[in-house]
Length: 282
Image 1: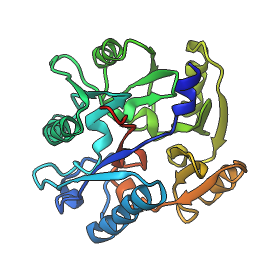
Image 2 (image 1 turned 90 degrees about the horizontal axis):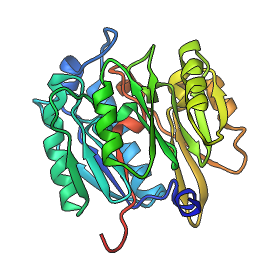
Image 3 (image 1 turned 60 degrees about the vertical axis):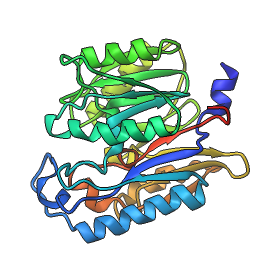
Image 4 (image 1 turned 120 degrees about the horizontal axis):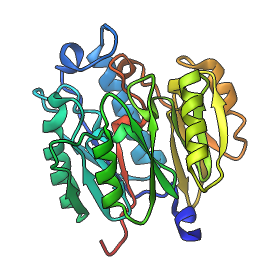
């Protein structure tokens, strides 16, 4: 257990994908919106540069596919833990073609790849919160009980609990891990209800940091051996009050990244990469 906690936030690789022009008009979204694809690509390039340069990860960039307008949101296509990768079955039928390129990329990295083939199951990676000690799976418009059951069967070493997602697209639309044992969570009533359920269902005790804006709770935590705790978060322009709360993390290096255009199509920071800790012998 101690080694699991020590490895939490340690990564070697990141899989990302380009933004197709079709994102602007054809990507799924909960509210009507106008997306500036040129600006979205600029933001995505900066995001990748942080992964590559600041975090020192080997970034594998898959090409954009115009027939898959949501393909930049690679997190939904796979759940990776240790040397095992589960290829999901996304809840939106229009997104199921995204898993092919993800499977090929993970196989090229010599991961142990398991594919979800049960036609009764749906699972989006954005509904999966891995704490380093267990999994929480959001039951949402995109993820169902059968999907959670298959995840539990694949990752047998960890407890898996389900959490109703009453508002927002995914579980991680209002929460993420801010470090070992620390859950970042939004202040809305649905977010707080979900947190309470997670606390009740877990045998582990977690600290929490509540931010005013639900989407601002979606951050990427990385633990670098030479730099310590690092947190990639949304910009002050997007969520000024939430940033003030994140600044309470005194031992952290905070790194801002704009994700403004992709939030218009329900994208968050974690959505845009699959992070992998690849052991030397894999």
